[in-house]
Length: 341
Ligand code: PEP
Ligand code: MN
Image (cartoon, rainbow, N blue to C red; front, side, top):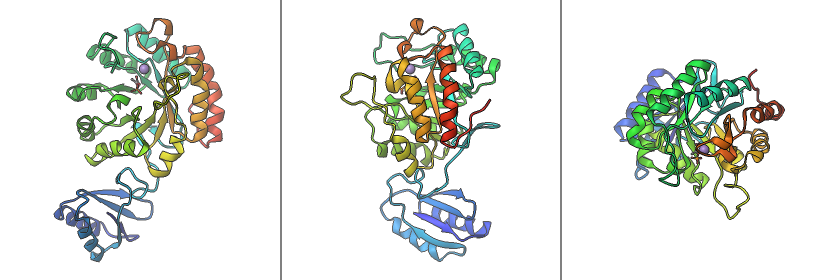
């Protein structure tokens, strides 16, 4: 249920509503709006009608059901878009179109530092790099683990770029959280509900990728797992879904951007690298993502793609990344966004 407070309702009235929600066995989530506050009351769907009685409390305008199965992720609870602050002056979901770039996997100090310096120069605002890799084959490179996290921290120190890195296993959440500025949940873990619940207990932004066979509604339900545990900092990322097409690694569902924007206030990013699987297809999908209204991109860049331990064929060289970034600016501007630099 959504408890809509009257314009100018007092803090005491709001506190009383929150208290009553808890007494009825639900969790209150206050959304501070520009003109009025609303309180989402979430919990057991059975018996939620008893929340209707809150309508008689002072300061309450009305109590309405949330129609969508995802509650805190929905525009019904929060009509205005969420801008998720990553660092002072850096938010995802605001006016700025944000590009995250870096290699698929951290491989060495030279590799991650060289990439970090290059992508920063071209206008990337965050550095990506996997230290724990969810590989299809157990015989493929699995990542440098904590040594990789340490190298990411060095690259952050060197460039000032915050880092995005994936956590694959719930037992690594605490360790990865010590290093990461944004924790990534990969496509293979979109519906790992135990992992999502743990991430929901952190006070750290989570980049949640869409699974390759996950519908938009299921994707938003996964976001809801994180939100319902108390972590409001969720960023969604479309990275291609599996279809019958084999010309590309996956099929980029570009319409997921406006569909998600219609139903959720959460920021939406696009990963054109895993979506296409081919470096020459990455730039056009970057432009399409900006034009479709995405909040940013997650792009794989490697100083020497032919030597990459994973995803070399879809990785841009620094010079190709620079060229893409130069052209991207115009698309971002047409979509009403700004890019730094
Ligand atoms: C990645 O970003 O390195 C990755 C493994 O992506 P996905 O989970 O989308 O396959
Ligand atoms: Mn990859």
